[in-house]
Structure formats: structure tokens, C-alpha cells
Image 1 (tube, rainbow, N blue to C red):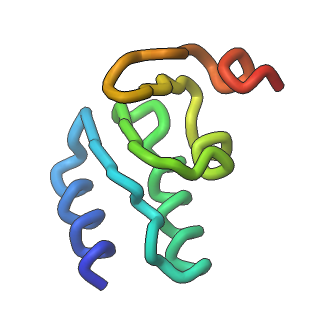
Image 2: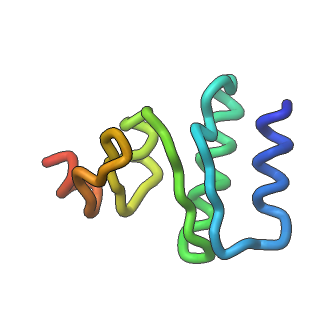
Image 3: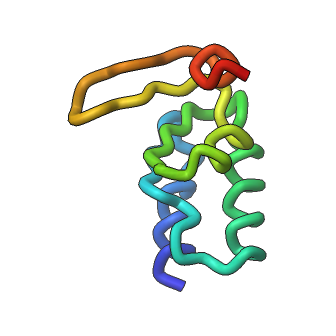
Length: 85
């Protein structure tokens, strides 16, 4: 429940920038789907930055990615370019 409250707080006031760290970690599948839908609804309205180790989730949600390794940028671009798919 705490993660849901934190997400709701991040969306109050329609911010232009939303920072999310592992937004679906520890959530049940239904809650994960709701979080993903909320992120999709922000497309075009806000910049959403997601920090995650879940590449499959990022492929579903992101238009542009940056991959960091030990704090250094090693790749960036659209998802297809970065993943080679």
C-alpha cells in the first residue's frame, strides 16, 4: 500500500517530470498493470524517468532509454536501437 501512496503523491498536481524507482517492484500483478497504465497515460503530458532492472517492463513503457553501468552512460536511444530488436 505504501508504494501506491508514493505513486499517487508523485502524480498530484500534474507534474512535468516524474521520477520512479522500480515502480512495480513488490506489487501484485493487478497493481503492476495499474502502475503501467498510469505511466502510459502520462505519455505526452510529462517526462517520466524510470529506474529499473526489469528490461521487459521498460520495453513496454519506454520510448527512449539510457543504460548506466557503474554510473557511466554506456548506451542510449530508442528501445529498438539499444536492444538491437
